[in-house]
Image (cartoon, rainbow, N blue to C red; front, side):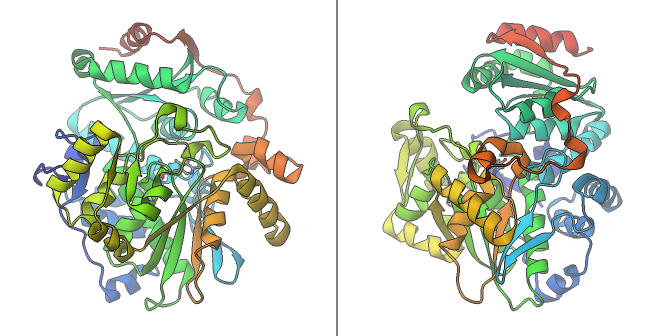
Length: 470
Ligand SMILES: *Cc1c(COP(=O)(O)O)cnc(C)c1O
């Protein structure tokens, strides 16, 4: 399998070439040159596989530059009950007939990002080992991504993580999750400033090409194809649990921000998984909902990006969205370039033609949005009626899922985080503290390991240089 760019670079790279890269050199996103179609016989065979073996079958369609035995060992080491809490790895939790949650948040950081990031950690270690190379991951986080990256990379050979976070601005739980890690290859840097200051330092450091090259700086952001590919697996696993035969169709509702999670659903559907609808749920930051309703994609400015109680969906532009638009437009890279490089960069938005907009229905996408009041009501309602506690992001997904139920089509809502991460809103909705997995009781009392620094890129660079043994 070869990979091409959404902006026209031809398909020459293989999986391991793009594994450690971000954007394609032409500024586009990598996609496989085609989506392998899964026939009915294969789908039936896959029904009975363990999660790790299913992951191996799907991954090997897209990865042909890692020997099969090695790839199987990597996925088996990743998707274990010890790491993800159950034998099924992503069990369905029925709420009522035709409506269930798919539990994606039982990994070490209690959010679905572990599903992909844990695999990425093992793939990075393997590929860096093969090359005899090293990588220093530099990132900025306000919560879920940073902790998922640290728990995936801790103790891995050849990898160091330098994670910037705004000092004192994460929840106590999120901060304790990251700062309690004692692994020598994990460096937490608390910046005196806000998240944007952290982001600016990452940009300034990455734009210093000489520094970037000599200190082998890389990232693990959500546009990484390997992350997206790992997420395709749980759409298949959810489908098999919700159905008995391949004649049945299901719909998925996905709490969405950067469009990585739901884009994996799109890939699964393109491979032939019988998905009726992909329901994109946003919070008050409704860039995606606006697009699916109107055909206009309008990037928000900083001041128009709201801080909400489902913070992992507070985005101003959806960094994976270009992948779907590329497929929607019949893989016309020229048109994609016009929309994203010309229209978005010059005007901050683009609008599809009516003919282009009409094609969205063929891809199964619908959407909706949710507000803080909706989240609180949905959390309360789910607790009362189904005796199930859900987090704020999953609540956004469930609220919008209920608006798109169809008779005879099971709806699966992806549970993207556990309520323990977002205690404040749970207390507001239910008047009680969220349940916390046993291993994490007392997390805030553990010793913390972090450095505090002013918002100064030169200081951060000096710290990185000092902590990379040449
Ligand atoms: C990252 C995240 C999302 C958004 O996922 P995207 O892939 O960016 O669309 C939703 N919920 C939670 C809890 C997250 O951490």
